[in-house]
Length: 270
Image (cartoon, rainbow, N blue to C red):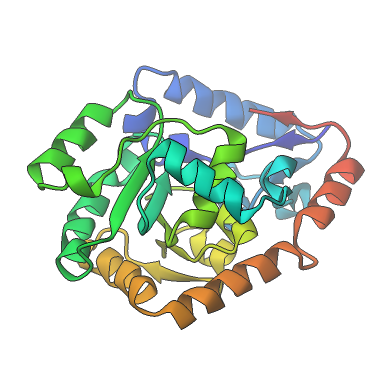
C-alpha cells in the first residue's frame, strides 16, 4: 500500500511541533518510510527531502500534485461576489493571505512589508484569515503597533463558497510562508485567476513558475516590492492571473492528479 507524506516539516521547524509529538512523529515517519512499498509526495522538493533525510531510494517515490477541492471550480456570478464583499465587509482593494497563525507562516514580516506598501498605496488593505489561536494575539498586537488597524479588516474563517469569492475579489494572493511542501492557496488563486506573489524558497519556485512573482520571505522590502508591482500594474496582474489559470488546465493540473491517484490505489495520508 502506498503511503503519502505531505512534507518533512518536523525535521526543520521543531518549534512548531514542540509539545505536539514532533520528535515521535519524525521517528514514526522514518519507520513507516522503511516499510512502505511506495511513497507519494506533492513536489520534487519534498521528494528530495525524503531521499536525503529518510534515505529512501528515489525510485520508490512518486510525485503527485494535489489540487484544491473540487468545489473551488464552481462558477459564480459577479452579483454573488459583490454580495460576499458586502456581507464580509471586504474593502474595494485588498491583498489576501489565508493561513493559520503559526510562526513559520511569517505574518509579522508581512505586516512590516505592508507598512511599506500603504505608504505608496494608501487605499490598499490586507485581509488575513485563520483560527484565532497560536500566535494570533501576537499578530494582532503587531498590526496595532504598526498603526494598520484600518488597513486590516476583521478576519476569521470563511465558508468554501465565500472563500472562492474572496479570491476573485482580491487584488493578489500573498504567500510569505517560510515552509510549504505545496501551497493549496496558491492553487486556489490560480483557479480564480488571482495574481500570486510568494516566497522564493523550497517548493514555491517549482509550484508557481512564471505564474507569479517570487520574493525573499526574510526581506520585508522584497515582499512589499512584489505587492506594489502587482498593485501598480494592472496589465502585469492580468497576465499573471492568466498564467495561473493556464497552469490549472495544463497536463499537470487536477485531471492528471485524479488519474494518478486512482492508479496509485488507496493512500494513507497524515
